[in-house]
Image: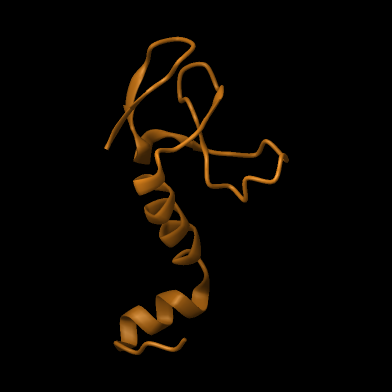
Amino acid sequence: MLLKCDICGCEFDHTEAGDCDCGMGCGGQNVKCPKCGIHLLLPPEMKEIKAKENNSKNMLDKMEEELGLKFD
């Protein structure tokens, strides 16, 4: 999904954006513009995708996926 920075006007795919490190309690659910570095709020439909990406980075989730298992 393409996002547009409100400050510099840069259009970018969410996969090109940096991870949010604002420290303001967003839980890393927002992104940084790759051009100017400003933190951008993700649209609601993207927050779920970003949360899933963040959760899939841990080793246990990767093992579950490889082995075809699902633990809740």
